[in-house]
Amino acid sequence: MTKTYTNTGSKDTRSGFGAGLTELGKSNENVVALCADLTGSLKMDDFKANHPERFFQVGIAEANMIGMAAGLTIGGKIPFTGTFANFSTGRVYDQIRQSIAYSGKNVKICASHAGITLGEDGATHQILEDIGLMKMLPGMVVINPCDYNQTKAATIAIAEYEGPVYLRFGRPKVANFTPEDQKFEIGKALHLQSGTDVTIVATGHLVWEALEAAKTLNEKGISAEVINIHTIKPLDDKAILDSVTKTGCIVTAEEHNYLGGLGESVARVLAQHKPTPQEFIATNDTFGESGTPAQLMDKYGLNAEAIVKASEKVIKRK
Image (cartoon, rainbow, N blue to C red; front, top):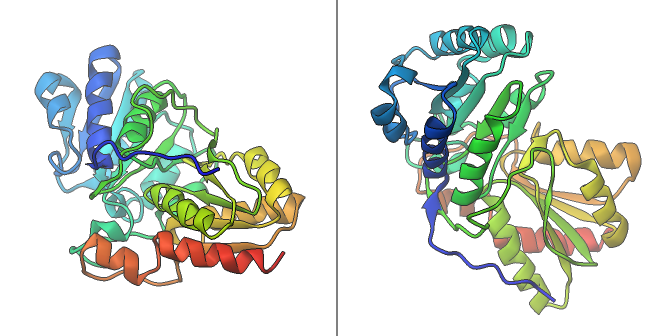
């Protein structure tokens, strides 16, 4: 039977990051924050107002921000850097690789406005390859929470983790449906819905779409298992393998290029341990374009309707 999840009020995940950072500012004096001229967009205002001595406005100098963050860890600080995902990864990949990943620095790279739901700013700002860039770096943890509550919990949790982390979240308001008091566990997938016919694993904004798809599938007599993969690296291999052993097929859903994203990570696990029919919900080797988030999610097939069709298709391949 399909479990019901309730949207308690749509919120943007970047505000979840801001709320988590505010809480960390009060509870952990070693947490410092750096921003590349986007304090309001990253919802870092409260931290800046309450802890001005621990906030560094770097300006439009993202590479310098990464270098500063790496240096701050040497003195025992826990730096959280904040800018758009495009500028957090692609623009400063060399600095992240050489100054943070190579030496395992305890820096939390926090990236807002990821994916095509950045919207009207268009393709130059809509990064769809950042998960791939970050997961390929040795030792880098990659986290992509699904709603406001989970983003807040993830922000707080990564401060306790020793090592580099990439935390990815978005711009628009999306369904907020996970528990407010949740405990976030890095690398542990969450089973949201039990099913026997098809496994749907989703990350980020696509988790809610997966749940909506499961309801539609249930009405068609198809039992879908839904798993929230908030941590793409390290991936919860066991959760995936246990599920496909039961269902025999899988759909992966993400707001990212299918090259290098969650789907490819899942395909690796399946290829190594249990070859299984798989369908991908992701952008197809393309850049985005200008439009509202809803228009773009629809055009690029990143919604519940597309997940339903992919599920019906993959079931026939069993």
